Amino acid sequence: MKIAVVGTGYVGLVTGTCFAETGNDVTCVDIDAGKVEKLSNGQITIYEPGLEKLFLRNIKEDRLRFTVNLEEGTKDARIIFLALPTPPGDDGSADLRYILGVAEDLGKTMKDYKVIVDKSTVPVGTAEKVHQALAKYYKGEFDVVSNPEFLREGVAVDDFLKPDRVVVGTSSDKAQKIMQELYNPFVRQGNPILFMDERSAELTKYAANSFLATKITFMNEIAQLCERLGADVDMVRRGIGSDERIGKRFLFPGIGYGGSCFPKDVQALVKSADEVNYNFRILNAVMDVNEKQKLHLLQKIKKYFNNSLKGRHFALWGLAFKPNTDDIREAPALYLIDALLKEGATICAYDPEAMNNVMNMIGAKITYAENQYDALKDADALLIATEWNEFRTPNFLKIVTTLKTRVIFDGRNLFDVNAIKELGFYYESVGRAPAIPSNGNHSK
Ligand SMILES: NC(=O)c1ccc[n+]([C@@H]2O[C@H](COP(=O)([O-])OP(=O)(O)OC[C@H]3O[C@@H](n4cnc5c(N)ncnc54)[C@H](O)[C@@H]3O)[C@@H](O)[C@H]2O)c1
Image 1 (tube, rainbow, N blue to C red):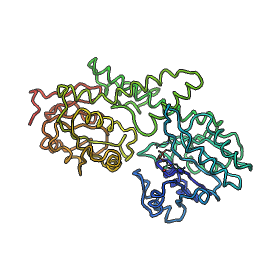
Image 2: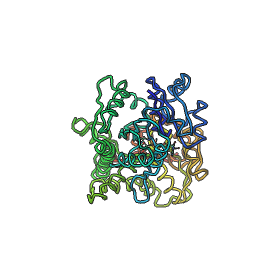
Image 3: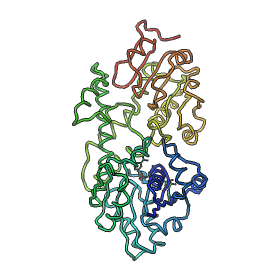
């Protein structure tokens, strides 16, 4: 099948590549000429495990192409996916200008029946708006389908190729058949393609992300209680997670959820609820708690250093909002950096994939290390903001010999509290008692 994907970011590039991988003929369109040039030259523009191999293979097989020209990229396509940004507008609602702008442009050039698919996360009613935007200029037959994307950055290729479910919102039998044919190769193991109306599909995506953000936030509150009541959140997490009704996943406390989706999607759902005079109380609380949780580690650090961080120097491990991605949108590490700099501290950071993106964003406000151990030089403490695997079992001897004092503040609960205490570290994590070396001495 001939497919066009408009918007070649994290979702668009994975979508286009994976559809090409199942034999489709895919053209990806993006407004960013630099990006299109790189991609056309076989240079991948995001870090996503497993993607590059598929991307190169499909370019070589001539099933995957890139262009800046919307008309040229979409004219032969049977299906056009919109994988465009839907950032928060000034009032927190999803900004639909990219989606509706492209819909109008498509209307101006379309000449035959096509299925236009909203892959972006969009509020309820957007399929109708896209329909209207297109119909302003194109009077022929077409369908608009809502097909929200549930991939997780870091495991996006697997999620796309083997989805738990595919949600398709459409009231058109013709579009339903086309979408079924397209997705059949991805659900051969029996996971469902759930057909529903457009509005339910649109809401499903927001409900999923808001539920997950709520689950994380609930655990962050349990962690706060653990710290005050002398319980261990790891034990509580295991204790509740083995109940199948609760499940083991998304129970890890930390320094707040971030990323390009949860913060904006929770906010947009609250806004959608406001617009129909419904106060979504739980989600308002989730946003409030999450804002405070982002500063949880900072409060611990300040307390340890007697409220004075001026002139202190910190090593920071992890910048990406989560491991296995270079995405730093709404990353908790950035909030921590900002707050520490305001307090007069300096920072040397290391992240396996996200350093270039941070350099482009904040430049020389902090320094960057070649590897995780170089970051430790002359630091008063090590701070951990992302749970990359390579941080889980580090060479503690190197940490001891390089840090100025054996002090770690860990926003991701990477280490066993007792083991690290044995090594003579002062160690604070989230929802667990601090490790304080028995002789109280953690200087070198
Ligand atoms: N990133 C995720 O993990 C994820 C997961 C599920 C859903 N989503 C949703 O998918 C959508 C896209 O997210 P993303 O993370 O891929 O965004 P992104 O910012 O990585 O990519 C968007 C791309 O669209 C391009 N673009 C902007 N305007 C354009 C135009 N007029 N014509 C052509 N291209 C244009 C940009 O240059 C960029 O390459 C959002 O609605 C997001 O909420 C994201």
